[in-house]
Length: 162
Image (cartoon, rainbow, N blue to C red; front, side, top):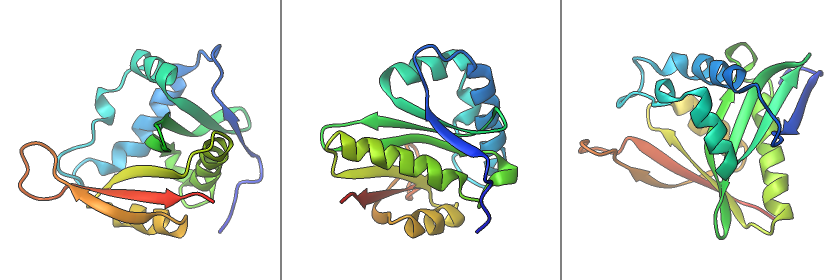
């Protein structure tokens, strides 16, 4: 697996102001889902202000390459674990280890706070996500149907931390 050597992961600070850049990254990263997943992704409902509000409740990390935002992850701290609310990687860098670096940053934070696991949800239609998360040590724990659907639409995956 090729890895961009210049990618640097950092936690989003309280003084961070470039929410429009994070929003643009998320929209680019999730654009390929249009027409693939049903129901459609809610990424298009995000605004820079909503991301800023989200960062008040969740911990965010950015992946930077030459000062440009190329990835982000937001995790919500729960009683025993962390929940990945959003993970996005620049489409041209997907499969090159950026997402792995972001997940590792979240895992290190979870461990430092005494959490036992990280959990996330991915869409059933995105089989490449299931494979990628499985390679990172996540295992399927359940399937959920969105409101109005009579079939499962999301897969819950969990990684036990040690």
